[in-house]
Picture 1 (cartoon, one colour):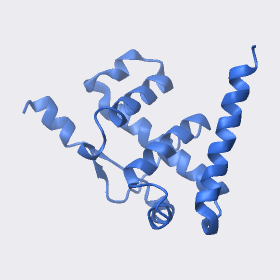
Picture 2 (cartoon, one colour; picture 1 turned 135 degrees about the vertical axis):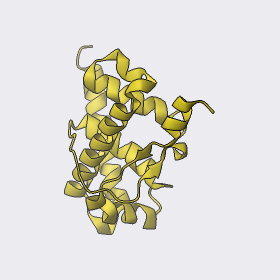
Picture 3 (tube, rainbow, N blue to C red; picture 1 turned 45 degrees about the vertical axis):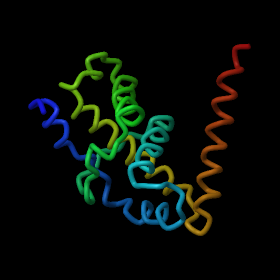
Length: 145
């Protein structure tokens, strides 16, 4: 294993401690199969809502090897590229910066979910968020036609 590969294997994805209860709801209600999946969803939502929030306190980080090389890792790189407009964000040298962007958008997405979520009907609340995003995308897609 190369030094570079080992260095990336040591990467951990932080999850914001302030949202532990929300992630517990997702797990209890079987909304997401894992915290990793919840963070990927939250990061995409945070980006869509332009809510990138830093955080200091982290719960147990998620090991990078949990993230899928064919879907999750390219998403992390792509999110960083979309945020910065800097193509060098797609390189391994910038991966830790890309991870920070991902973590902060995940925190922003979780904060947004918290602001609209009814814990008693968590799945319905998330479905409403997704429906709202679908309507926005459809409107955006057809506005120039």
